[in-house]
Image (cartoon, rainbow, N blue to C red; front, side, top):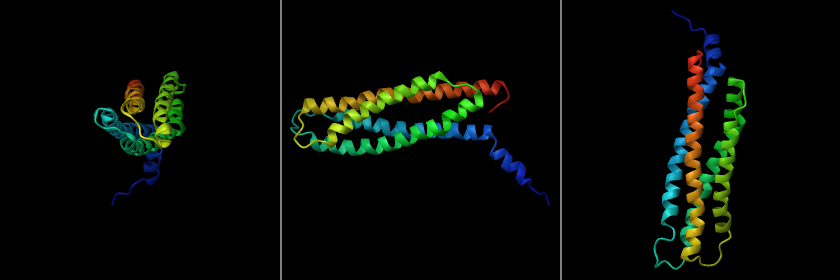
Length: 172
């Protein structure tokens, strides 16, 4: 009977390259999930203010607000994981701090500001909201959508380029 070298298996599973590969896979999976939800939010935001006969947009904004808050929590968890695990791992693995990630995190923060510019006023709604104000609030989500879609794409392109670079030197 053939025995399995559990130490070799454990060492392989905890090898930094394996951990980095797992982190990259997780990043892409989370981006796909977040993008799917982002597209839904975008579609919902684009319907706000379209019907002239709707006199009060408060119920629609409150409903959208609940969906945005759920998305916000997932986005925040993803961002914290990137900052605590993914980016330090890439920095360690490649031995350099990547300025691109700093710039992309600034984009991420801008998108968060747009999301908050929607959430905060919606949470304070007490009076009916007319069409133009509703459109203005929803436009904050449209801006966040554009920034985040680009943000996710750029992040993955940079990480794929690093993986390609690593492949040329025997990694990944």
